[in-house]
Amino acid sequence: MIASVLPTYNRAPLHFVKGEGSWLIAADGRRYLDMGSGIAVNALGHAHPALVDALTSQAQNLWHVSNLYEIPQQQTLADKLVDLTFADTVFFTNSGTEACELAVKMARKYHYEQGNPEKVEIITFDGAFHGRSSAGIAASGGDKMVKGFGPILPGFVKLAFGDIDGITNAITEETAAILIEPIQGEGGIRQLPDADLKVLRQICDAYGILLILDEVQCGVGRTGKLFAHEWAGITPDIMMVAKGIGGGFPLGAVLATQEAASGMVAGTHGSTYGGNPLGCAVGNVVIDHVADDAFLAEVQRKSGLLRQKLEGLLAEHPDVFEDIRGAGLMIGLKCKVANTDFVQAAYDCELVTVPAGDNVIRLLPALNITDADITEAVTRLDAAAQKINAA
Ligand SMILES: *Cc1c(COP(=O)(O)O)cnc(C)c1O
Image (tube, rainbow, N blue to C red; front, side):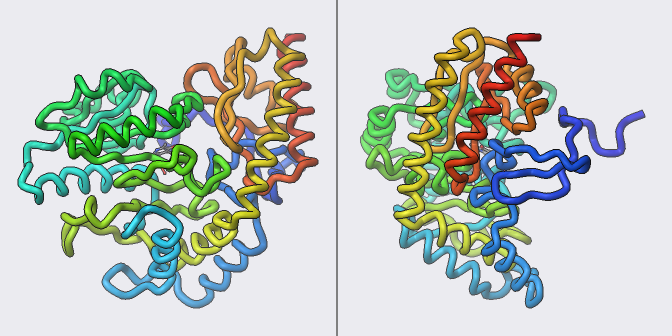
């Protein structure tokens, strides 16, 4: 008989009942150090007092009204994001997948309104992950995600990740946009060099196509800047955001320039829940914390500390780990053992990590993790590596 919860997940037999900062407490009382943050979601850790306060005080007043009415919390959050980024305008969603949907629609509508309705094609890359909707799987395109779900939404062209030279050959009269993660998350913490991002920007400008960045995982402070593309000194036309921005409350956003968003007039898009008072009350507090220069400088310092310790770990366990990759507090360890075996060994050492493609384990701690917890995490990674070797 089929499970009462649709069996699409491979769940670990772990049952957490409470979170405190970078720690998760299981039903049996065991304390796990959380280096996964619910896949880069709990940006400020678990039960951050300012987030608990924002959520509970909003909950006592008003949860939801619909976008038929003004939502001051949403207006405030949009104003902040416009102030802090390249964007002139913001649409709020509940998830990264929905942000992908709008990003694709917006790019196509832009060209349509420019008198180029043939420009519908989006160039994407191997190993990408943009969500699980029909557009999301067409954009991501991994066999497991796509097979059996046809007809697959047309209009996506896939290149090898980082195949910058291939792009100009792939561009046709029908190309609308390039869609890419500055650092692939699910694909195995694969980072696009800053120089390549710059080239992508130049190509988009030269051909009159839009650059869409998916910063659902690498954005909101994860790399030590508010958004990852800032390292390259370029800006996109459209950007997808989710995960960290809600700190654990389902919230996403599409940020865009006035030009790219110019086709999206009243009635062309909407959402029942997106940007509701509860979500935006929390999102405002997340952004206030993360957009602070001192906070971002701390993320960079902690990244340096963690990486330095991980270099030591690699030197100790050359038979377990192959390399360290990523940026900020979005770090991947490529494994020589099966990454899922390592994640299991880490659970046995009361440490939570997240597997990714390319046989990588991801470390995505809370951005405000303490130095002591960083040290403890590496101690537990070491214990897990010893356990794997002994097995
Ligand atoms: C998680 C993720 C998504 C999808 O977000 P959901 O909130 O799961 O819909 C899209 N893009 C990237 C890069 C992601 O990491």
